[in-house]
Length: 406
Ligand SMILES: Nc1nc2c(c(=O)[nH]1)N[C@H]1C(S)=C(S)[C@@H](COP(=O)(O)O)O[C@H]1N2
Ligand SMILES: [Mo]
Image 1 (cartoon, rainbow, N blue to C red):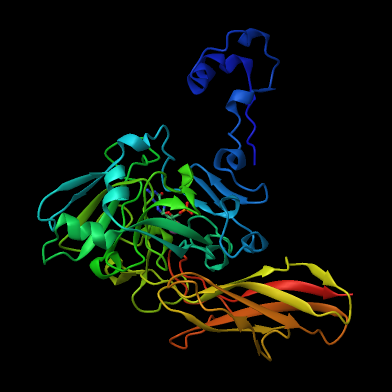
Image 2 (cartoon, rainbow, N blue to C red):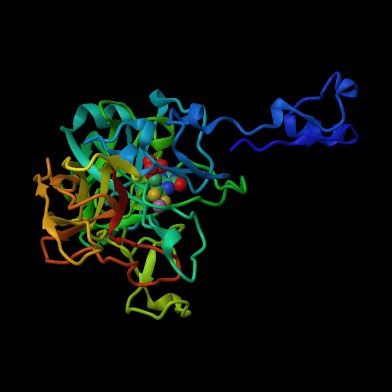
């Protein structure tokens, strides 16, 4: 991933600006020298991520997991995908952190310190699945612009915090409230302080769900900086873009929140299906709410080899936005026949569910194992990429792995 900048000695003057200091012995530098100070920082070290994570972009930082890295029941930090729209904040002082409630539909503006949030409200811990709306984007044809996520922009962690609903009650909300919008402190990529990198939100009904948290812990520890330290809004089951990182302000709105990336085509899909490549007017695009049913085979890793006559136990997770997953099936014959997997109940609403199956292969050779989940409404994952849309959201096609019996 490291980008190398071979430096020409003649460029010394402009380099001082990039490095923030004069290169004192610059005249001694060999021609076309690879200056350490100009190399990208190591994102794995920077964010505590596993070296196998796939970096999609360094400005802003975006990285995703491979399927087998998501094998844990609760995703540990090294495998949690990173999605930033702006710059990751630095030098956060947790002791001085405050959260302000404003907007047309608060009775009065109110500010809490982080300490007040932690001590004045009851704390809850839930496992919540967060998936980027654009997960799976790379499969759309014609292609959609944006991070070319494969399957790894999803995770399920333990989140500890207070219920947003409890805090909204303490603030006092007018009866005309329809939406909340979050504001985080991350700067826009341009560095322009008047621009927000992202400011999205959810309708009041979602804001008031038991599992919608203002969280200060992830997996039992302070939230890692890149995932929103010291305070994050967590709205499980909805596109992860609704879960604002580094939140310091929540606006209670008397209309659908119109913050950055709420309008136009951002995190929206055509209200009615369109043909691949079709132009869609902004007013015909609808906000994504609950994410569709999906599953991942996390063991074995694709490409696994197994001796003839042995059973293979596959396992993975399935999730369905606001809904529960009721069945997961697997197929080893390209979808001609399907067998049911064992499926566990979720630990709590909006947590992903675990499945496994013990598979017999009829003879030596190459196989693909497909998994297909079905939600409580009876909706199934499609085998192929579903509903093309201009921004490449909501690809919940079946996941598959290759297996060789030798
Ligand atoms: N403040 C802030 N919150 C944010 C974002 C961001 O750029 N800034 N990105 C959103 C998007 S698009 C996603 S998919 C998730 C990613 O969360 P993660 O980096 O913890 O995986 O955070 C959401 N919350
Ligand atoms: Mo996202």
